[in-house]
Image (cartoon, rainbow, N blue to C red; front, side, top):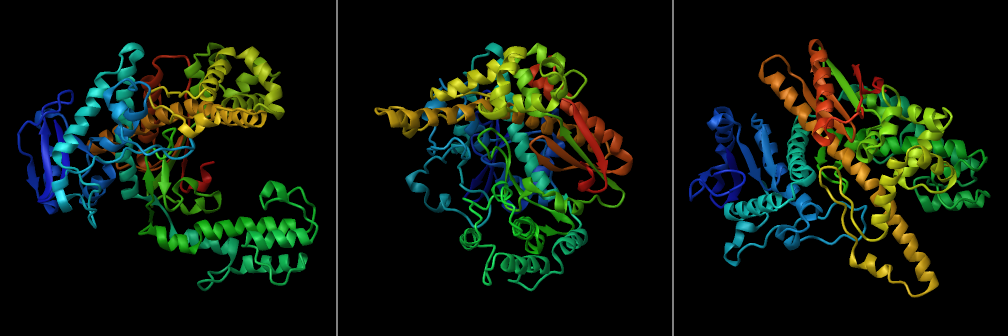
Length: 572
């Protein structure tokens, strides 16, 4: 059953569609439900499962609807996120020939490192009035059921028009399903929250910074370092939090630096450098995860950040507020399992290099990495066993580091593993010429802007040099995009498969485990201690399933390392 969920002036409109490939309404008029009664209606439909299958909920954005349902105790099995799927279909090279892609209304983006171009909402009819005004609560923007159904039908038409060669259509369909599942997982993780001990966090802050200071004042440790810096730099009024003030003080003392970055400061042997680096480290802790952060983001023993699915052009997640994707090691001891529970922290070892092996179908590199550390295996075959050199060379190939040690080692890598190197080189050449590249499942890099193409129409020697530099920069972007984006594809499938397995176990009444954290290639599950083994199996089986879904039965391993701990700081 496919159920359309849309905002309506009289509440919420529910409309059943006949089938996915022919999205026509089963009834001409939608069923209207009062917003206060929506959770009960959804729970009934999810539980009864007419036809034996759980309904697939079709809505504009998962984050507009699902959090309220979760708050009411309603958990869904599957959905279709119109906004996320539309972004993918609008820019995928798999659908570039379709009417949907040609007519996509998008916001221009000049910088390929910015967030993905977002689909703009359709313009409301002139007579709709306040229906499309931004409400204080609830979904925004509001779509009528007809508009939402029309957009869904257009997306399904675009998907149906994808060439079936090389399983392109099924791969893209898998990406849309995984992206939509990811939106649900993000909402569920925000609802559940990361287990967080406020008392332990407070203790960590006191150990590093001293007692909690009055509002607007520095902690004792920072104030002591500030006094030391003022004396060492002979600057009685120095404010080390001011970059301009700090730079002037450094220059007055003969410390000729162009910035206050750590690597540049370390080049000086002035006695003030040590206290300054310590001040910067502790100041970052105080600002990013200090008492103000604790008050704002942790409540009831849980940290509940808002995740942004597909928030990076490559498909990686981002977060909105709270720094969920940057929990520093200093405070990880506060991430602590509840009594009787454990944290299961799993990460896909060397995910991006292994994805490159799979994408390039480099049998030599796959064999080198079999049953061992990938870099060590590569080193054994081409770098005299020097793991460090093998790692520098491979990362240089993926990120476009052509100078220094990476550039020096590249010829050896290319001779030993030509298919892998050729794959990323072709991706780089595509970017340099203004083309796009596409991940394994069909997410494509954003095309260059007209301003980019104008930059390539050089007429002078100076313009030519600048154009070549800009082209190389884009080549580095596309070189990495295809690998990082395909790794994000794998991670999305891993997450979706893991969610399905954990739900299945929980439904059977044998497990109460929850996904509570995700970072690129790492997941954290909070589980009863007696069910840890079942969770580990679910994590590993989901990783194997993700590999099969993306690449089929290829001889490339995607090992997952697992740590069972009481607190996050013990995981690595």
